[in-house]
Length: 437
Image: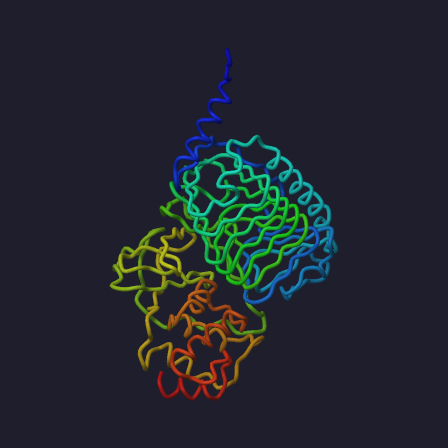
């Protein structure tokens, strides 16, 4: 007589359930969290380099080791004499490299070792589900557990992680992880980015404007394309590459069901350039009171956009619920209890935004960095002419004219008939704005 042990029966039951059903909550047992050690203090940690182009935003510290600080490119670092860390206008935090003053070199060596140990630990956990979706989990809702693939993993459409605030997800991927452009890893039921671990042997690529939650422990490289967002950490045993993208620790995440954890303090936004005067305050508009998920007083009558202290834009629908630029619900807990609100529909002639932007008397283009750029960015976000403006709104007015600003300006020019719509702010565009706004 054939005898089946308990583990075999469970495996067969899980496999049968997954094969008979469509998108569903995968049946997986929860596992303990992964100890990141001192690597957990970094938003980005890499061994061979970290590079960026465009209006990238990093909330948290950056570290590179054993590569030197010359392999931190695109950040415009400022390093004081005999300092243990440098600063960047793109980083709300500190930047560390081996050549800086003590104790930075030793601390980085320990952090990199902790990163490698965490990778080995997470990749070695016993899986509860294997080869789910044959390496394609788009459209699924996943319960906590350890998921393993002997190949690569692709996420072509939104996937939801559903579980409590203390539940853990570990994804073991033997080859590459690819998240398609515009795709989101959504959270439900109180799931937290700090309890999600993507453990990747190959390269991780996050597509344009995609949003991922969790810590990426990658044995190779991590690439965030234009407008991509990682709510968590990018820890690579090779390099991390950013393009007008966002990496942030300890901030709210894109959620399928908005959660309301305790409100953390908003980190101070660094000055874009110490020699440049501060960007003028947003023109006066009604103050709104809101909780972590909804505007409460007064309730907006149509879509609005709220500017956070960090400069990020948060959208609000007509029911007062925070959403991302595509309308998906969000939970934003790292904000104060009131903020200035401005419309994201078309701004009427004579508005404060129009008055500000038509006062710009200089040409602006790629690489420009001053208050006039910030005013132009505020104006383009307020006009909400399409996906480029929405992408710029997610980053906010950085006062740097990069790829997102160029695309949003070209989008606006095309929408109002300015030719050629090249994304440059020159005499033709100035004349149009002075005549119409």
